[in-house]
Amino acid sequence: MNSRHGAVRVAALPPDQCRFHDGCRVTAVARTVVDIARTAPRADALVVADAVLASGTTRADLRATLDLQAGWPGSRGADWVIDHADGLAESPLETLGRLTFLEKGLPVPESNAWVEAGGRSYRVDHLLADRWLVFEADGSLKYDGRLDAGRVVAAQQEREWQLRAAGLEVVRYGWELARYHRRELAARFAAAIHRCPVRPEPFPSWSGVTSWSGVTQER
Image (tube, rainbow, N blue to C red; front, top):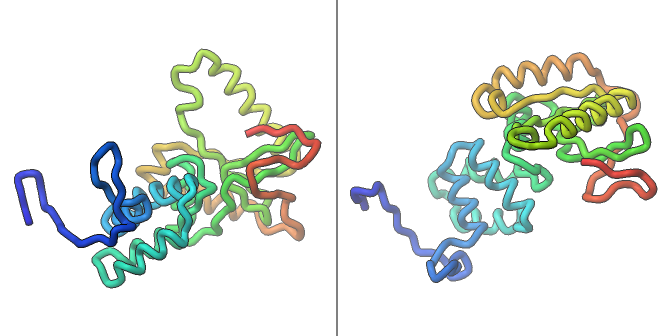
């Protein structure tokens, strides 16, 4: 039905897809994610799905919810979002960066992999280990309004120096390109990938939230 507030769609929901929050009846997390994935732009839906997987909801939870909506409008798009969501992404910017690789058919890097460089372990935003290539998402929140912005910049420069000294190529990108100009960003990514052919041995890396024993850990 339609009202002065917009179009209203009504559907019967299984009890396990509903919750109460502050006395209000709301949809469960998995149901909310799937509804967004069916109806929202792909970029927005993937950001939400990444965040929810990072918070503990599983891909199986999302898949089971979508299975109950087979044939609903947008279900094919939701299926894509569930397949490509990544709970290792730590910010909307990282998600949009990864989406750039996906949309343009580029090799998709591993999210937030750990590498060792200069006696420290660093978690890099995106890693193509077989090409010794790192992509770093540069959000402004790490600099804007901070009294210690100079220290943050110095630490970032030291980090990049160590990564390059270990043999890794580092490519940075920011919000403007990732949100509004992904075609241009994809061209930059593709050029970097072209400059870094596949190596005989991938750069050593590992996944998870902890560093190797005995190695100093840095984000």
